[in-house]
Structure formats: C-alpha cells, structure tokens
Length: 315
Image (cartoon, rainbow, N blue to C red; front, side):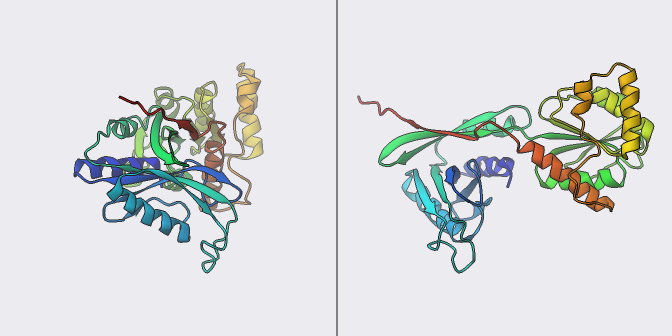
C-alpha cells in the first residue's frame, strides 16, 4: 500500500469530520513481514487501509488502533512474531516488530498530512508521531519520500505491459513515443501519462532528477541510441536500455566516439532487467520492473528516526 493512499485516507476522513489512527512500524528485530516505515491507518468503522503483513498481528493492531480512536492515547506496541501470533495460520516469522499507534482526532489540524500529500510528487516530507513509550512521551519522525517517476521511451508491447506493472508498484509513469496510434489513452489509461513527439526531443524537455527512472524500449536501434544520448549525462537514478549485447556495444561505441563519459556509460543497465531467463514480453517486463524496485529500495536513508524524548512544559 502506497503512502499516497494512506495520506489520502487521512485527509478525506478529516474532511468528513472523522478520526483515524495512523499505525507505523517504527522498529524491527529479526525476521518481520514489513520493514520500519511500513504504515496503515484504521478509521472509525474499524476499516484497515494498507497492510503490515496480514495475519493475527495485523488483526490485533487493527483492534488496538480502533480503540485508540476512542481514548485518544498514542502508544508503541511490541509484537513478538512467534507461536503467540499466527501459529495456526503458519505465519511464524520469529522477529519482533514495534508499531506506533497514533490517533489523529478530526478536530485537530491536519496541515502536515495535507502538505505531505501535496508534496508527494516533488519533495520529501517528515511526519512526526507523538506517542507514549515505556510511560514517557516520545516522538518518532517518519520520512515520506517522493513518488518515483518512470519515463518509458517506447510505447510498444513491452512498454505497455511495463507501464501497467510500474503503476501497481507505485511509480508515476510517463510513456513517450512518436506514434499517436501507440501512445494514447486507450492503450495507456490513467494514471499513466502519454507524450507524443520525437522521442529524444521529448525526453530532453522533461525533468530528469535523482528521483527519475528511465527505461528505453523503443522500436529500433536509432531511436534507442538517440534516447540514451539524451539522458546519459542526466542525474537519473536509473537508466536501462533493452537490446542484444551486439546492439548495445554498437551504441556504446558510437557514444564513445562522440566523447561520452565512460562512467556515465557504465551506469546504464543493459541488457536491461534482472536475469530470470525471460523470453516473452510479459516476462521481460517482469524482469525490468523487478530491477526498478530493486534500485528504488536500495536506500541508505533511515525511514524512521527516533524515539526522541518530548519535554513536558509546566506552567
């Protein structure tokens, strides 16, 4: 479940005058179904939006979060994922998970969550969670990172399948092609965005930053080379190009002849995708999206920081 859906739920429930409890995994030890930073929210009807891995622990978090809406007290709960939870369901991970339950009354301001939702496509946000832990008030800070942008150069068969898969795993997807009979809303429904025009020129006019992933899967060698030439020196977090090793080497030699930086060429993932022995277009798309997720999750930034003590102000 993406952070967008959680933030949208919090804002919508508050707009309707209802409270929710935000539940965030703030620490883990050993094997757990979700890492620190995973989150869900529970509304007044006890609906749980998102997942922390399912099973009995999730059911208990849901129950406690619903109770917290009524009493307004935030706290950190520790769950031992052993035979006490989920033995009958075969869900014994063996680790420990600490979850902060933070009730968010509708009457309180929600500017932090609105801003985080508005900034989700452009900048990082920090969500503070004020809860009690071991009898003392503490604050955790949860980092909400921007939605990664995926630029797919090529609206053919692989581009089409990849675009739909990438949406499912949380990318903002843009597809570029010079053929409007391929790059259109009928083949790429919302939220996928299509851009029709000469591929390299269109790419050159798009914002490419460290939160951008570029996949080059055009219909031919010339378009692939032109697209790669355009993005090669960019700060894109990922650049991948489809093709045989022979084709890739020919393109690389052309770029070297033009003076391309060797380090920039070495950054390109080509052949593209994780090696799973893919043959069909569906399998190739799976291998590419798997590599995108792998690179996306390769982060050294801590998603959750804390706990930080909160000083109680006395009159």
